[in-house]
Image 1 (cartoon, helix red, strand yellow):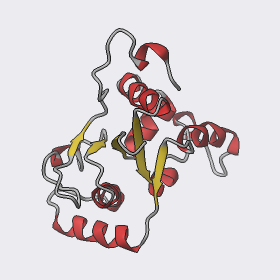
Image 2 (tube, rainbow, N blue to C red):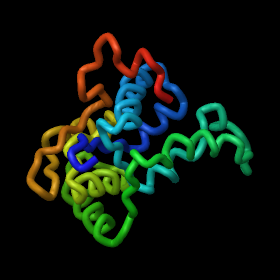
Image 3 (spheres, rainbow, N blue to C red):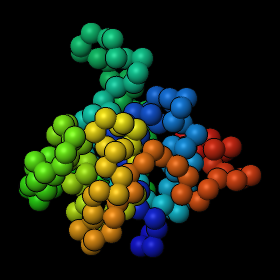
Length: 170
């Protein structure tokens, strides 16, 4: 998949897919389906594995939360077309730089997601975070100088009659 389109998903995207959130699911299904077919690669930080730790139906449960739902979450995230980026010292230092220098960015986790995409030169960043991330569209550059597109998930191929949205790829 050397020439595949690289798309970064932050935790908001994963949580939307895992929970089938109605306002997000069609676009997320489209991207995920393209990834399953080898047309795109979905990249994410290992931080997303921690952040997407339960289903929406489990949010009010007392701990310990039964492990039953982890199979669903892991079945979506741990796929060959999903590339996990470790939070290593290089990513951590870049995240620290980003959070110190980026106006209106408050969450450290979001800085880790941005740093991961910057270092691995992933020019498309999907999120639903209106407070910290969406306003940064066009303001962040990848290491190779490419301007990062930060937006809500959308079908990179435009959908159409036979789009993955119709075929429910998850």
